Length: 415
Image 1 (tube, rainbow, N blue to C red):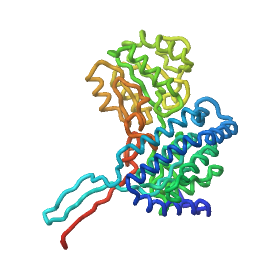
Image 2 (cartoon, rainbow, N blue to C red):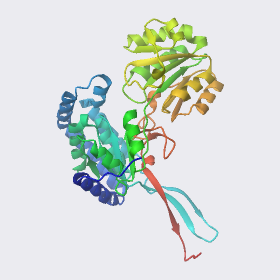
Image 3 (cartoon, rainbow, N blue to C red):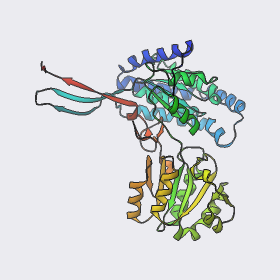
Image 4 (tube, rainbow, N blue to C red):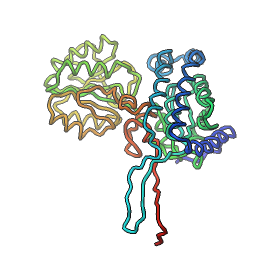
């Protein structure tokens, strides 16, 4: 059971500044917030050389390789994309103050339910410096203060990015705070700081998410790992299935919406598996499979029970043969992390069954799982992909960073 941790003086100061800033942020107009966001985007692009220098230090110090290095890496093009995402958030509708519903009671009381900020949002995440900016600007747009606790691998990058954003003239002091990542104590301080922090968002691997969810005293919104599946049904257009599989696996294998498992209907396996195995192998993908798939293509090593539930986050994919859509759904619901799954099929009945019965945050028909993303859904940047069912599910963006309250207007009614 989680226990409250005594806050260090530095952490307490930052959290108290964030709490004070949240009250000021809630008073900013949409125009004021958007103007400041556009200035943040300009500041990011104007400080690209400084950001890249800090990121180079992080890369050299971390010694990370492969997918993990790619997550940490910033490039001039990625910095431009980060700034572009900030401008897109500025251009999105502001949910704060939106009237969700309203009605009048028989006694004349007018009741309306409106969107309001959450208050102070804490986010614990790993070595992805772009998340620093995404989280900060989404929180800012919705009138929330944000307290960031990134991974130690990105310490220099995060420090520079937070300084750039927080020092834009007009941004309230304390609106964007960064905790020390050199000690694990700051994670425990943040997730147990009831009264100072309103909600915690863990974003990263299973170990990080489990630690936060199991130890937080502050309410947590879980953003989950992505053991995502592609199911190729017997009526699938196999060229389409190959394009979707290759894209979902190889376009960016280090992210949570990349596909990790390929499930193939037995009726098309003999034709499809050898061809897709060759295409995947040519793309550098390590293949693991069940006994049936290994008989159909060379180069597939035996998969064990752990493989079916593992999020690889690299060029590796498991292949499993099934007898039909029901068996595919059963397998997915057993091993999936409830993130994103897709069916490739021309059979509308099977597609509808898959869409209805697969218990994941995003379920596709004839499209890549790589679209599970705040930007691709039209939400701008995102805090992550929520795989839980409360308080939100799927891309976790502006509206999900709000709560609600009731405003009741009377003319002297008493009960």
